[in-house]
Amino acid sequence: MTALALAHSGFPAPALTPRVGSPRRAAILTALAAAAMETRDLKGVLVLARSGRPRSLIGCGGRFRWLALSALTTLYPEADAEALRTALGCKASRDRRQHEPSRRAALVARETWPEDVVTGVARAVADNEDAQLTAAWIWPVACAVAAEHTGADAGVVGRITGARDKPPRAVGQARKLAVYLTMTEGDVNATAMAAASGLNKDTVRHHVASVEDARDEDGALDDQLETLAGELRRRLDEELSQW
Image 1 (cartoon, rainbow, N blue to C red):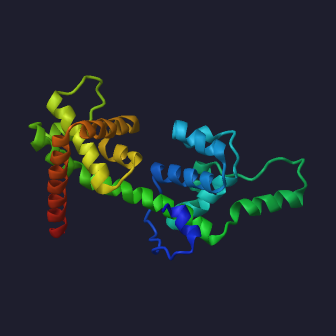
Image 2 (cartoon, rainbow, N blue to C red):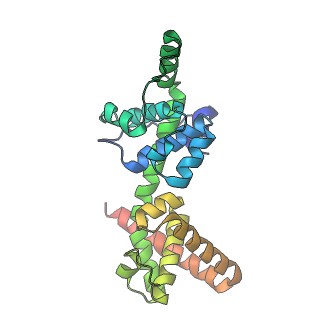
Image 3 (cartoon, helix red, strand yellow):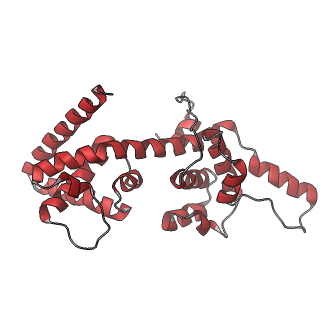
């Protein structure tokens, strides 16, 4: 169940823990996307999906921006609200032809949202950040496990340079396995995986699809993946016991 669905489901949700400091770019984008979905602003959702840049929203409706602002100021109480307004593009209507009382009412509507709706969007941001932290923790361990299996150097597997040159076979195979293990064992999405690894989302999805296809065709690989997943869980549990 998604964070937004949970907010409307009637089930008690875990307490939302405020974040310290100011939101990063990923949090701002998540807030905008979640708010656009909540307000059913399809154009905003599609624009964000294509570009991943707040600036690309020029020309889109502004209503969901105010919801994103409310969610971010709820999750980041220490953040500079004015700076967030600028980052999100929140501003009052400048249409002087509109009747003044109506213009004020529209502005209030943009800034006032039901608490459960604001909390739902804020929770979506928090969940996205939690996924990125999870991926960042699991990724290097998964690289080590996968590298040992293929005979590659774990440091090379996890070092994404952006070069177009094809990596050595053992490195490429280990990288695919590490992405697959991180996403399946950490239950994280492609966005979080990309942020943790330095790969782009298309490459992440391609790696996962490649391993899944090979798994369907090769029963031996299926057993190997189960063994690798078990080893990854063992090492992660070992790390946790040392904290």
